[in-house]
Length: 509
Image 1 (tube, rainbow, N blue to C red):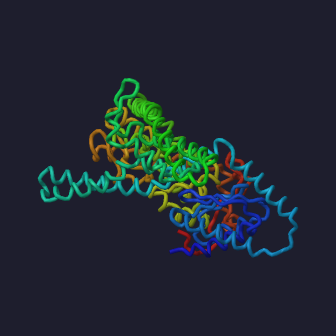
Image 2 (cartoon, rainbow, N blue to C red; image 1 turned 60 degrees about the vertical axis):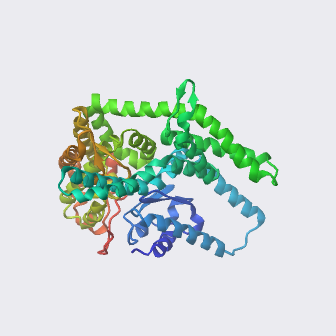
Image 3 (cartoon, rainbow, N blue to C red; image 1 turned 180 degrees about the vertical axis):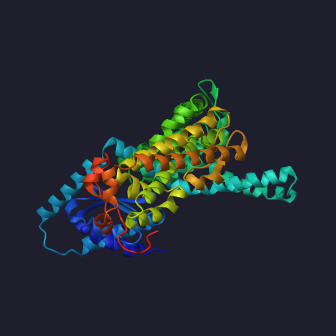
């Protein structure tokens, strides 16, 4: 296992020291580190750190480490930064400290308090912690489906006794999904998580079937995760409002009771009916889009997914996926969107062979491809296709054609869906399901993958590089430096950044 503390210490030095770091955030595969002065950061040294797949400079440095490791490094980097700041005993006047604190607050406000960034970060923080459970329960549900089919067909009748056991394991989480969403939402918006859980529990309580609102009978789970998220956010605001005026001696009784009562009434009479309607419209819209214009819709969605991942906007799709899974048992959007990653794999393989003399970029691709085949596309985005420019565009084209194929299956009535989120490419196969069972869904998904691989490869091979760029990237100087010339990248329309090359022979996969 990689030494996260050592990596954090090396990152601290490479980023220009503790004073140069504003904040540290992480998603599933990469760190986002805000820096005050980009010139103090040593990009070459950052890319030379073991287990760093890519490092992209900017006010918000992006350092790709891969799943699992990124969480540990984020914690250790924050700890190392805090320790370094505490150890700094240099003289400071009160005015200097006040000025420094004011500058930090102003920079954070300018960078992170835009409406779009706030929405993305908060939606991500609510749903991303649930992804491991969604994957686990989805895989267990898939195993249970196989066991049930074998038992029903008479091939292995004794498996029938195991099916209820796996069924309970897989369904328990989904039955209480609204509770977990509400707890995370309450925490994210400054409320008490357990009170958020109580509010979410109202939505899934069996007793709501006895309540009639606006002439319609409520149903347990109505509104799903959208209703739970909205209710918990409202509850967090009510809780904070109540704490401001409640006497300390009575706060323990007044605040939670008032929060649950007011939010509960709003949930039952407003949010559940409204969120239920929105959830139904999402289901109708997604299903209708793919059944009536499947090939075209798949082409657009598959082609746009990589730019969404690059900007972080793909996190906003998580509630939609979850809502579809709640409604019909699977999301038809995820297999289509997953084609973006497949197109990128085809593009990366083409880059590998077109730049076969550039061993440094070759090592980068070798290290990032296994993660790509398992559905983690960011190493390839930031380590290969995006810095090179044109290959990122041709990867999107591959994803578009793959998405069109999956969308065509949906349009013909053979829906291709996923019973859980968080996986893609080859790792999505165990989670597939559709209107005609796993086999047809797997056929549709595999067809899309093959087309995305091939189109991504072919378009990158023929259109991914200019003649001058090929000569430059395969020249001895470039190979020795392990870098993509900035001028060549700019000429392709890509960002003016250096491709993170593995300049030594150490294994960074």
